[in-house]
Length: 158
Image (cartoon, rainbow, N blue to C red; front, side):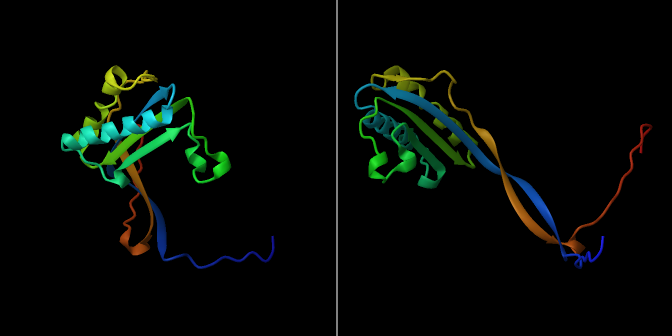
């Protein structure tokens, strides 16, 4: 090889930092029959209002609402919109730092199956539970801030 050139080392290390970033829960139901989309939207509103009545209010950035099957991926494109789907998968989710509040969300889907509008099904996975969110933060750290240490461990100890 000829003409290979390098550059001076950078003054930083690239690090990948993982950290505890709260809790999340996600659940879904299938809503079928006439007016499926309208019923799914009503079901979502019922969940949010019941949670709020119990003191568990989630901001828009802390909650997820999807109506899979209503062409929500292409909302706003007239040719893609369908206004009368006969079944919708309603996905609801929440995230936050209060685990008890996230767990409370999980109890609101079952009543929709037992006493919600007709055509609600697809609850085979059980109620949603809070699961930990692991955040990721790529960063640059100045090399002098990192202490180097090498440890050699052998089969008989260290």
